[in-house]
Image (cartoon, rainbow, N blue to C red; front, side):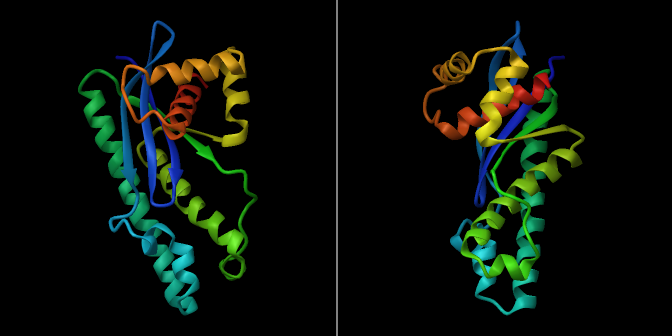
Length: 197
């Protein structure tokens, strides 16, 4: 069986997922999906810290916890579903890659809710943490890389110059048809990086 990796680029309430394997040392895309990390795809749930800011403190904390649990459950279900489909074709998922933001560690909730910039950061972090939690729960080796550092890190690990690596990732999507946006490209790159790390 050929090992494969899944890569994620997360947004508020959803993530791009790409699964790939290596065939003769070259990456081959096995699946790509848009994964929802909230059941109700509205601003209220996709931006939980923004929503909590408008609530009494205990209610806001409870709401964030609810969205966090839901995101972890949906991320786990997405990974499990892709794993089941690919394992039946001889491609078990063994690694999970995730692009990270460049932010610093977050302070306590009251400080987050008093800063619009921190609220945006916290919304994104909630969904990234859910993906990492789900990957670990599925027994996958998690690799996370800051988005701004990913190309350099992957270039070093894969021993491919950054410009050449960028072209190869862009070409991966040619046979798949659209979308092959920056989301899918970065998800592919972090998956490839995770698989060879």
